[in-house]
Image 1 (cartoon, rainbow, N blue to C red):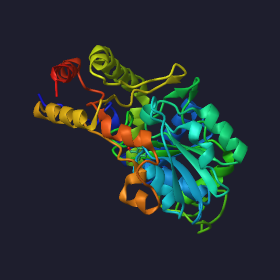
Image 2 (cartoon, rainbow, N blue to C red):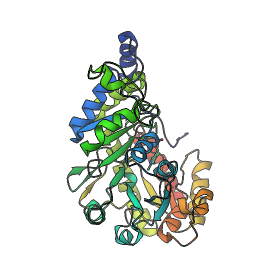
Image 3 (cartoon, helix red, strand yellow):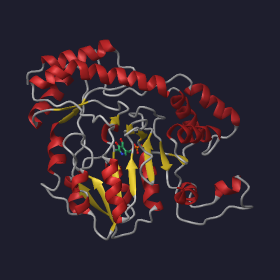
Image 4 (cartoon, rainbow, N blue to C red):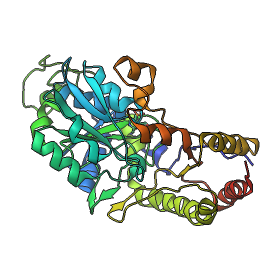
Length: 376
Ligand SMILES: Cc1ncc(COP(=O)(O)O)c(C=O)c1O
């Protein structure tokens, strides 16, 4: 039996909606399906303004532009994250200041946040790892006291909640990913969630190559022109059509993912306890959207051995992230070993199990049986 790490999901109406977009005669960005996706996300999450983007990476780049990040500014990011969380700000000339993570949720460690803030800090970017909320009460309190905006990279956390409120609604801006590995996807895609309306007008201009084209199409100006910096951040309506089919099916998708997550959790709990392996920790005040399931193995050697053991059985498991402060680029901006000890340790030991909507219980039992049989 071959068990891939991920299988892009098809909810059912994607092709029908793409055909509808083609027939409509509007297949470039900001067409009717884009507008449906904007409205869906705005209403469901309670966000004042949403813009679909070509990726979460591009939504993060829009955040850096909206906050006017300049060379010499500092931006605080967790070291344990995907490169885009950081790179989007470095592109504008920012110096990343790497924060360590909490050993339980693997989210930014709010207890060490304040000492990273300087007069040059222009943003704090948090990542809700595996869709489990960061300690937003503490983070927003610290950021508020220093007048520093908070951005949520919510690539993993669509539909997750912190203290009953949707992730992506806490920061002035937040970003989503609709990459094929995410719960809801369109191959490649993303969204910018604008919670602070002061950014809405300029966001639309940056999104449309620095022009006021959207205002022109609404009849608010009689010609459109170049009025700010910007880029081409809006996806074709064909992709939005695909995405809308997925958003409409979100309840079924989330139910499938819950089943997969719960099966791993139930069947691996005892084994983990007996083998010094840690399963994901979800604090009581967090609801996670079952984006991934990981194991924290006792050592790098055991992690590598389990990946190889599963591979022999045609089961693909993966590790991530290499701490950003120890990457080639991270070291060039001053990162060094020991700066973020928890991120360094976790990065060596974390293993992600195959996780996709259509993973059957039969396939999962094959994965779990292999793990139970693993002795190193
Ligand atoms: C935390 C985080 N941020 C950003 C991204 C980038 O997302 P995208 O591929 O949509 O640009 C990813 C990708 O997986 C991610 O895990």
